[in-house]
Image 1 (cartoon, one colour):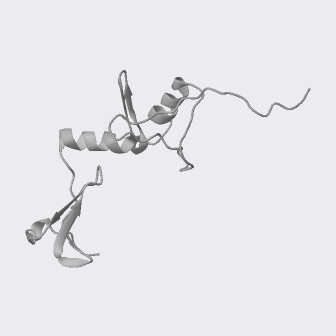
Image 2 (image 1 turned 90 degrees about the horizontal axis):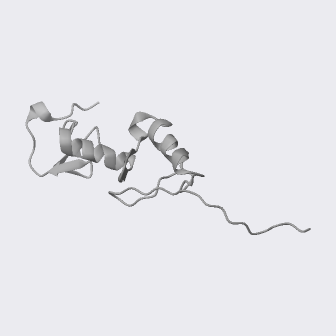
Image 3 (image 1 turned 180 degrees about the vertical axis):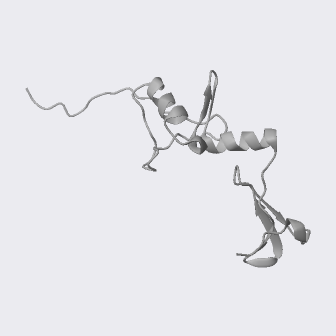
Length: 118
């Protein structure tokens, strides 16, 4: 009896309903595949740090980044202070601490809203 070179395996691959990205390996090693839906849900919902968790309910699966974007749509952004854009000091920028969205402005924001240089 020889070696069996080709075999068929069934696996689960999850993609985000919002951005269509496939779930990555948690160690950043490409696209993850699981032996069952239960194993995928365990890894992505309870087996990771809170900021990496997917939202998975009946009929919805949303990746960690899109989950944070949805949270900001509901609760509003948690903006850092404004700071001068390094490549163009006439441009001002700020970033949301929750979802990472950025916002730019050509006018200087009030001093109270500016980031203190470190």
